[in-house]
Length: 68
Image 1 (spheres, one colour):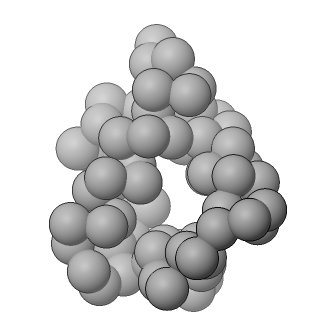
Image 2 (spheres, helix red, strand yellow):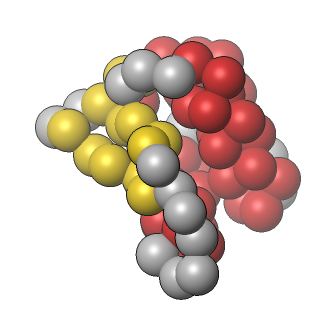
């Protein structure tokens, strides 16, 4: 079970490097997280970028994208 803060940082790095939307399923496969863990990490990441950040986490259905 991945640490939530560590997982959110890993997801952030993956999305930043991808520079395009990625399916949540792909993120689960790459990180080894289950759906609940992924959802919690996404919320942590969304909260982090919702405050004083030049980046925004966008959710398009089952895809996620980190944009400036």
